[in-house]
Amino acid sequence: MTVSQSAIPRVDAAPRPIRARLAMTVLSYGGLAVTTCLLAPLVGSTSISLSRAFDRSIPFADNIDAQIFFVARLPRVLAGALVGAALASAGVVLQALLRNPLATPFTLGVSAGAALGAMLAISFGTAVALGPLSPVPLASLAGASLAAAIVYALATKPGRPMSTSVLLLAGVTLNSFFSALILFVQYMADFAEVYRTVRWLMGDLDIGGLAPIAAVLPLVVTAFAIFAMLPSSLNLLSVGADIAATRGVDVARTQRLAFLSAALATSAAVALAGPIGFIGIVVPHLVRLMTGVDHRIALPASALFGAAFLVACDLVARTVLAPVEVPVGIVTAMIGGPFFLWLLVRKA
Amino acid sequence: MFLHLQQTSFQYEGRSFSLQGVTLAVERGSLTGLLGPNGCGKTTLLKLMAGVLHPHGGTVVFDGRSIATISRRELARHLAVVPQETHPAFDYTVLEMVLMGRHPHLGAFQLEGPDDLAIAYDALAATGTAHLAARSYMSLSGGEKQRVVIASALAQQPDVLLLDEPTASLDLAYQLEVAALLARLNRERGVTIVLATHDLNLAASLCHSLVLVRAGRVLAEGATRDVLTGAMIRQLYDVEADVRFHEASGHLTVVPIGRAQ
View: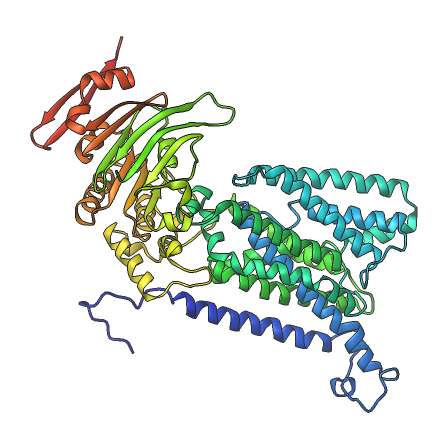
């Protein structure tokens, strides 16, 4: 029981201090993410026994349960967590950078660039492979980087804050331009290549092993290291560039870091699993409804919730029509699409 | 000289407007008004003083140092700005908005502590917005928003406060309230204040000194009672006005009569 004394300023109605909120957020959303990642590999079209999967006495070649767990499901769950966290965080960062709650990681043309790269690799695919990355992820990474570099070059002038309206318009325009190129290549390509491209565009977390994750991990880790430096500056940047500057934010530097880290995370995610839509917009909005809009809370919460959300969506994708798999991009879009429309209607 | 513009020039790309060799000085502890017609350069001057824009010629000197050599973070611990309007992209609470004023005092990964919270609540109390702390900023009225942004600037614990038309969107009662708040901050906390305004009566009642700006040049500069005259207002706005001392209010009042021929 608390006794209210009128002589003392009322602090009982005050919001919890940021430290406690951050700790609670990391614990609860982290718990959710970890639980999802632990449970998801156990569920699937084939039921497996965890004790048998970890039974060292059975040779790995003969242990079907271990093969399903370690080769098919675990890399897939880890990829889902990584991609979900990367896309959701990139969404949060770009929405603050562009001061536009409807921006997504794909607004900047990154996904279309990646898709063009993948399409070219599929259609004219030579055996160019770099380490564990096969030609398609490699080409999509190159395409994504190219798109990000073009948009960045258009929107920046030395020593000046970025023009967020140019950033937005250039991204949207580049998206259509690359889409037109993709359609052209598809028009010229044969049936099987078109099918492979379309399948790639739907997004797929079935990456067949841990090597591709290891290949993009440095990019994602770098992006997240930058994300960690940004939240309080993003708060101010989303209030306004001028006010952020007068509150002590180096606006040009923050904008550059925000753009580069978001582009890095998005490129890595798309190279790994294709352009999985709506994570970057649904998750930030859902999380803000639950945690409030302070980026110091909403950014880590979105990363963790994004991981859990995509792993869960992939679980649905694997099991809902088992033994047939639904591409995970379809599942996220089927949940994300209506939610996005509801947001738009609610805003109007 | 506390805040000093020396022969500063500035031109926006692709626009005809320019500031040409403006020199003006703001004394420590003063309360200065910037007056002038629309597009004369008031906001540009404020942005130059805040270091948000960089002059193409001349220098802006703050406390003996060129403002270009002071980091944003260090400057923000001494100088705060209240823009004309503030529209956050997300729906922050009032307390969150005010706590953002603590940003220049916190390290890169440092979260605000009890001291910062106390300073924020003090700023809320000083602006009469403590009861709004948990409210959403976007749901506030124009007057409340303006006072919250002033509170956020106060949380920076600045020596200098620059305000761009702080009363433009406010009704009469809030105009008086904000004016009283600024006078109190200046008197009790010694905050140096520079405000741009179109409200001549506000300037007359509040400001110790005035800077009149027209077409990117300083027309006149000095104590309010010396500068605020009918002749000056005619030169500044091409408007005939009756300026006289008002007994009940204790300051000059300006009644515009018509456009000068």
